[in-house]
Amino acid sequence: MSVPLGRNYWKLWVASVVSNFGDGVATIAYPWLASAVTRNPIHIAAVLVVTRLPWLLFSLPAGVITDRVDRRKLVAWMDVGRFVITLGVALAVLAAQPQLSSPEEVAAGGAVPDSAGLLLLLIYTAAMLLGTAEVFRDNSAQTLMPAIVDGENLEKANGRLWGAEMVTNSFVGPPLGGLLLAVAFALPFFVDAGSFAVAAALVFMIGGNFKPSRESGDTDETGKPSFWGELKEGVAWLWGHDLFRPMAIALGVINALFMVAFSTYVLYVQEVLKLDATTFGLLLTAAAAGGILGSLVAPRVSGAIGQGASLFLTILVSAGALMITGLTSSFWVVWVMIAVFSSVTILWNVITVSLRQALIPDAILGRVNSVYRFIGWGMMPIGSLLGGVIVLAAEPALGREMALRAPFFFAAAANIGLYLYALPRLNTSRIEKAKQDAGYQETAESSDASSESTEV
Image (cartoon, rainbow, N blue to C red; front, side, top):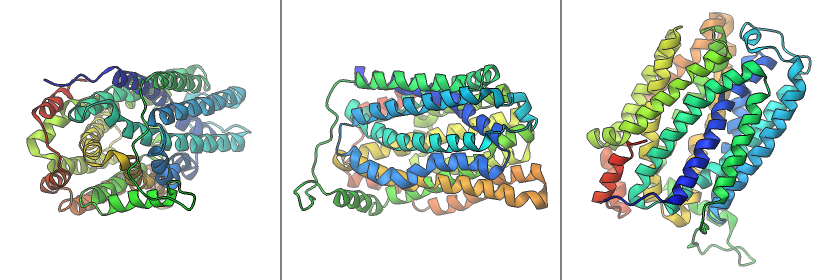
């Protein structure tokens, strides 16, 4: 009989679902706003560069802070910060709204506003601040989960959370964002700000003390815990681990290639697929469909073919989906490929995140998680910039349309190289050895939890 997830879990669940709904609205709002300001692929890609740059800059110190403070409060205050930042963006866009082209005019290559430079600076600044808050918030939230649910429920809890997040982030949010954009450019930003306010209130309501116990003896000259000593401890633990080191490297490559392909995606959608904002939002519902499928089948696929084989499947299927996306001009083919890509992404996440939560000691979980994400997410701004450079460099020789397709081809080919790297390092036998070394034992309840995680 499985252990109930509990009230605290459901408060976190609702908070995450609400904030992800806002993120889903923002998923279409920010790139569409950027495309109303500039048509330059480097400038468009730079929005994602500055959004992901904080993962490269702040992931490591965020891990030390996560292991020093109450993780619940850190999550809540970061949501408060995101509310304030997004509300500021909404008010600024509202003031500039008379100068902005309609979504239909933007898709047709309409003129940019006179205040384009200031608006672009606003977008970059907000993206950087929101990305920084996300680094601290997400690292803390992921390390918070093992303190809220029992170990045997981790896959169940993560599966249900990610499935619900996918629905709101990719199925509900983007279409609504497209409709709101058609009404007024500022409207989706106000909705996004409201979602962060609600999420913060719910996380503050979670009961208990979530400050981790301290086991490290490193101190500075004042007798206080040494920041750099703790940071080095997290880096050394992960880099010395035979499973998590190559897993982090693989994630870094995966994320970089994803950003290569999708950093100029809004231009591909407008100029190759010929979509308006509302239809773009409908296209992004594919991620939700694939995410739901992935959350339903991930534990079953993992149990049937093994965790290592499941990770390899993710890499190969992603390569195929990217290649087909680059070749087609069909809305429905792209929709299906996004769904496929999303489903295998969930499969990867359910396996790797649950492994980290189960095998990394709680006292250093925040630091090790931050090192993992420094490698895995720190590559995203590099990939984003590379995607814009590929389009800009390819356009003179290949033309605009083929240049916008080129990042998908590059990312697909590079995924094959990643598969060859992962094959001897992320197989099921390597994963089972890591479990044995950590003294991790899967119980009958754990097996039940894996099955129940298919119910979203």
